[in-house]
Image 1 (tube, helix red, strand yellow):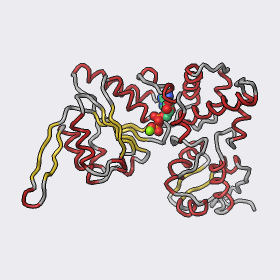
Image 2: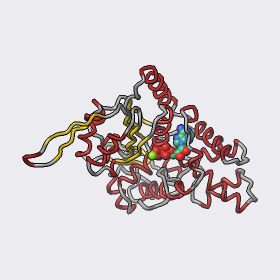
Image 3: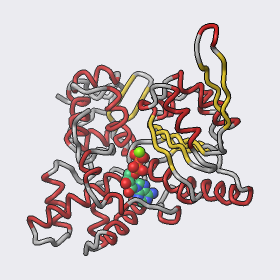
Image 4: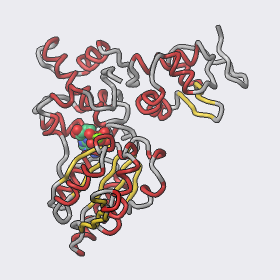
Amino acid sequence: MARERIVSADEVVEDQLDPQSHTLRPRALDEYIGQSALVERIRIALDASRTRDEPIDHVLLHGPPGLGKTTLAHVIAAEMGSRAYVTSGPALTKAGDLVGTLTRMQPRDVLFIDEIHRLPASVEEYIYPAMEEYRVDFTVDSGMHARIVTLPLKPFTLIGATTRAGLLTQALRSRFGIAHHLDFYDDGDLERILVRAADLLSMKVADSTLTRIAGRSRGTPRVALRLLRRVRDWAAVKSGGRVDDKSVDGALELEGVDAMGLDELDRKYLTTLARQYRGGPVGLDALAATLGDDAGTLEDMVEPYLLRRGFLSRTRQGRRLTAEGAAHIGEKLIEVPGALFEE
Ligand SMILES: Nc1ncnc2c1ncn2[C@@H]1O[C@H](COP(=O)(O)OP(=O)(O)O)[C@@H](O)[C@H]1O
Ligand SMILES: [Mg+2]
């Protein structure tokens, strides 16, 4: 998982090191571009909560990485004028970690739990009464002296984010008043995100050049912003700082990103599927083993975009290359049932 792909939707060190990445994060709901159905739901929930002077319902955000889940959690806290406490499923190893934070929180504060599908079961149990009745019960002492202490909490909002909603227990999932799947952004939304970013970074760049970057960004704001930075760097070194279509092509060719936004790993995935497995169907585990990669990584980082592009299909028998996918890597699909490939 240490691989750093320029098109990775996951946050990489480069994103964290960039001092400007914070400036680019939308702070208010009005600055949050795209995802209109979700934004509308949140807006209504916020308005209603203001009139009742209550926090908004607990929110579960699921979808591929880099689409704005963490950003939205902070935006919601900002819109409520409250603070966001940020943690993650794997970081909460003991219930005690959580109890400390919960009891410190003020009314309407937000508890953001990233990767909530990785919350240990023992911690999850403490969350149920916290979410439903704003209280935690915990056991002090043990054996004969054990007793349960109940602590009241201030009304708060839990926001959970996950790339794997399917791994959540039904019990946890049902306790969120708002659950929403974030989908990939269309190129128009990505372009608006890039226009805003270029503006904030005081870059002079034509809209058509930003369109070109948007088309290679895999429907993912995080990728779009990273490509923009790379293009800017390339231009600074190679073309006297002029950011135009040539700088986009030059920078992305250097990075191995093609016109559809696919990188080497994506193409290797498709090529392996075509050549070793004759287009499939093949199980994910077998494919992962051949690629020398982790099945979970492929499922989260590679497949969503290939599926979305229509290069790949998931069938009950396994992964299958589509005619479009084959064409993209220059392989020819023989149109027979079973989708075999020419040698
Ligand atoms: N709707 C949006 N509008 C503008 N920028 C966005 C939007 N969603 C995400 N971004 C940008 O993309 C980056 C990645 O978003 P993030 O919230 O970290 O994604 P996630 O938590 O889903 O992995 C953020 O730094 C933010 O600047
Ligand atoms: Mg995140």
